[in-house]
Amino acid sequence: LTPSSAHSFLKRYQLRGGRLTRFRVRRPAAEGSTAEVHLSARDTENNTRVRLRVVFEGVEEFRFQRRPGPARERLNDVQIGFFGPLVYLNLDAFPEDGPPKVMDFRASDCFLAGRTARWEVVERKAAGD
Image (cartoon, rainbow, N blue to C red):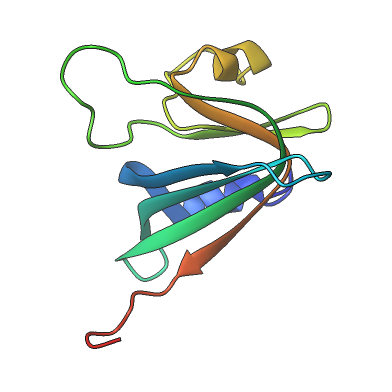
């Protein structure tokens, strides 16, 4: 994900109403942490449900916190931001006037930030595989 591709990514993949299906952080030796996020979304090009895998390298910040009360099952709003050398993903965004600021991401219960982010569509396994 880059500043020039983030808008088209969010436009193509409707994440509102989707689900966070997996979150994992690994810490290889010298390269720093890697985070992997799996999401379900609707592909607006062909109106189908897809599974996305987003990998962040050089993770410097993250928070995935569950608060007391009813569990949230669906994503409400998702934002991507670029601040300094980091790519931020906020899976718990709330509407604000104007463009999001880094503090909006850090105030979220569900965000991460890394030096690079890449994504791919994960194909569903066929029955019997």
